Length: 97
Image 1 (cartoon, rainbow, N blue to C red):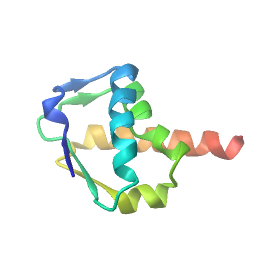
Image 2: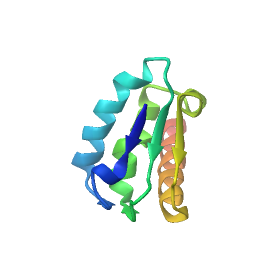
Image 3: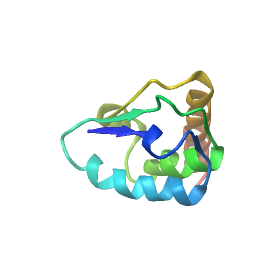
Image 4: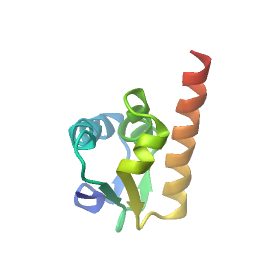
């Protein structure tokens, strides 16, 4: 399953949009098919978007499960850093709970 973020926009910045996409992705993660997140043509994502779209998936799946079920392609370094930061932040918050 290929999810092309350029079809959503070049700049992805709202928590509402991130949650909307996460709600679409969650049922897909229950299947056997790998989800490919393609960031070709995307220049920016906000911390809020990344947290809602990706990090909150950790509420239902472990990081290892997500690594097995998803992959990121055409992801600029700045976007990789934003996503990685939100994952790390979420894992730290979970460990404190």
